[in-house]
Image 1 (cartoon, rainbow, N blue to C red):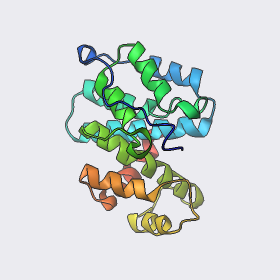
Image 2: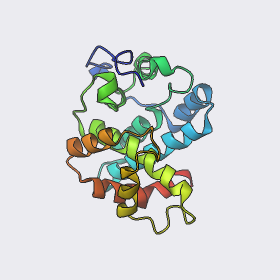
Image 3: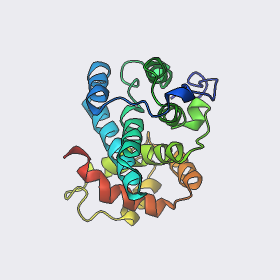
Image 4: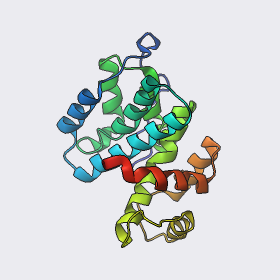
Length: 202
């Protein structure tokens, strides 16, 4: 991704009056069906959505908040397939036009601070940033293992992270930065993904 061209040039998103407004799960998947033709990208977004919802659930959040976290994960890369040069401007504008909760929009806007120029501030922001790259990396690792996620351990994931030729497009720097911002160790993040991600596509 080009760090300059994707900079959003703003830090305020949505309207506070729309707090609590969400897409239904059906509406969100209809949007993905219209916008995303790449099945691997859909898998990634579903996995991140599941991680976000699982984290919110373990934090004791109610069903409504869990759904908001789910939506942030599900839609964060919705415009990447057809409009990579407008990522994530296009999805932000779409959600703003639908009067969606600004916290969801802001989380999407801040899931790549190096690219979009928006700092993760809320817990939702920080966890979407933390799960995004790590989810994709661990999924790639699972595909090369004979047993997939079964028996996977954090030390194996970290060993692969040191191999710069493996999943080279995944930024190790972003993974470390996101872990620090979230205040959660990389080991704990990895273990959370390993234990929850396999259920994402069930």
